Structures are given as C-alpha cells and as structure tokens.
Length: 184
Image (cartoon, rainbow, N blue to C red; front, top):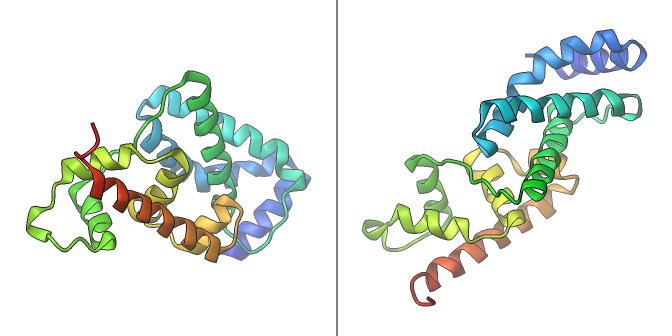
C-alpha cells in the first residue's frame, strides 16, 4: 500500500509522463474492480467498466489536483458514475449482495427494538425499495464500511452532508420497514 506522499509523487509523475500511470493502476486496480463487481456481479462487464474508469482517469489526470484525499476516492467516484451510466443505459438496477452480518449492522443502526423478530428477508426487500441515492449511502457506509469522510470524498460533498444524507436514508428505510406489508 502506498503512503499519501508516495501516491502524490506517482500522480505528479503520471501527469508528466503517462507511462508512470502503471504504478497507480497496479495500486488501485483491485479496489476499483471489487467496487464495480459488487454492483454488477458479472466478471466480463466488471472488466469493461473497470477499463473505462482507468481510461477516464488517464484522460482527466492532467487536471487532477492532489488534495490529500486518497486517489482511490477519485477513482471510486468515476466508477460509481460508470456503474450508474450502465444501469441507466441498460435499465438494469443491481443490488449489492449482503451477508447476514452486514444486514445485522443495518438493523443495529436502525435500533430495532424487537431483536428476536428480526427478519433479514424483509430488510432485503425494504432495501430494494429505496431509491438509488439512498441505497448508495447505505451500501457505502454499512456494507463497504466507508467512513463519512471517505464517502464525502467519493461523492464530492462535505462529511457532514454525507452523514446527514446517510441518516436520512436510514430514516426512509425505517419508514419502509414500518409500513412493510401494510400497502399492497
């Protein structure tokens, strides 16, 4: 793993000589690939979208400014945009596969009082009823374990705004869960 200083130096080199981009690619490929694969669940499509991300990153690299934020946050922001464009183009909306532990962390955050009556299937169905933006906040925070600061860097907003939007998404999820099964 690269230190922030090493990464900044590699970025400056790659901005002058595109051949130096290989080290950045090597350092961040698996992060970008994993982020995309978790959303599209097709290896070939993930490869194509990952290639697009790095092509766009190379094209935009001369304008990139080192701000102290991880370079991977910028790449993930590009990846998120590519996944969303793919979903709009194909009208396919994918969901992130979740483990029972990840679902439990959402339950814990929702502070459900009836622990013994937890219904993970119901939670999954309710998560699928959230809009794309709300789903993104919950996925990044609870399923990918990202900090509000990292979410803010990826989504180009303040950490406080990322936190507020995440908790609003949780409120929407709580409302959906409360009303689950009552509206047919």
